[in-house]
Image (cartoon, rainbow, N blue to C red; front, side):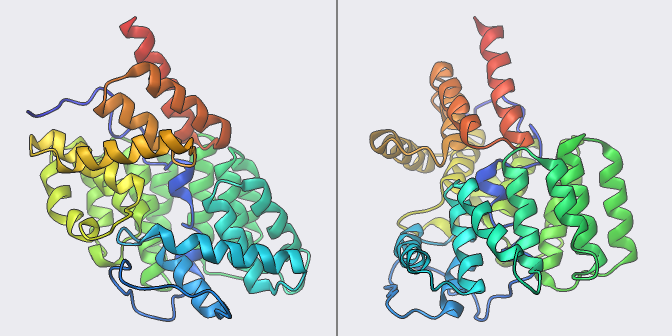
Length: 351
């Protein structure tokens, strides 16, 4: 049976903290040295004496929907040990900060970034990640300041996108979308990675302005194979908003189907697509199993997805509110705030 969703699926294109993760440094300035390897479940990752190039490669790949999340913990353990020993190189420190951000340890990530930014030359990657973490923490003014420090270090497209993404969280307005469109019309993106990021930010802004068709158009300017999880989420939000959940099942599911530990957000949107399409509930069952596991282990990193699951799929508003509050305790982006206030308002209307 098809499901009509109670929360507006274009709540805002601006992503929750779990999905803002890595948009900055990993997609723009750090170029993967190898092609995407596809599925990870058959590959053993040995971290002993792993090169920084390989560490960066795996962290870059962790943004993709087919990535097996079991790869990251041993890498994190290795970087923690290096940090404790006091022998960390700048590249290792940046990788460590990215993983700390991924785990929602924003204070820890900032501590590592501050060390990096106290060194010369100033790392553009560190500035971009610092801006990204500031958005995670609900500090868009600080993010703007970090973005402005990028002048002379990166292209106008990167600076403009960084600044306008932050300003959109500071005081949401359609004018930032129009300004970014103007910038992208005047300046070419440096690489396909920059194009993916810029198009994703444009799509986020279009979603906020309730223009899901425009969001889809921005995202589909780049091939599906180039998309990180965050682009898939923005696209899935837009597709659900226009009633095309079946497209999510057709396009996203093949990237996730053989992954033994798929990303929570990918499971969530596949489940929502299934409900909208009135399809068999394979992905709903998988998402339910994931939520049960998170509950049993008291894991809170994916609290936003937990809140959405309980509201949209399980239809348990008290649990949805509980997880939205947990999410707000650890992440304070604009979308984290809107998720909480929307669930609070809708629960009040039902009581």
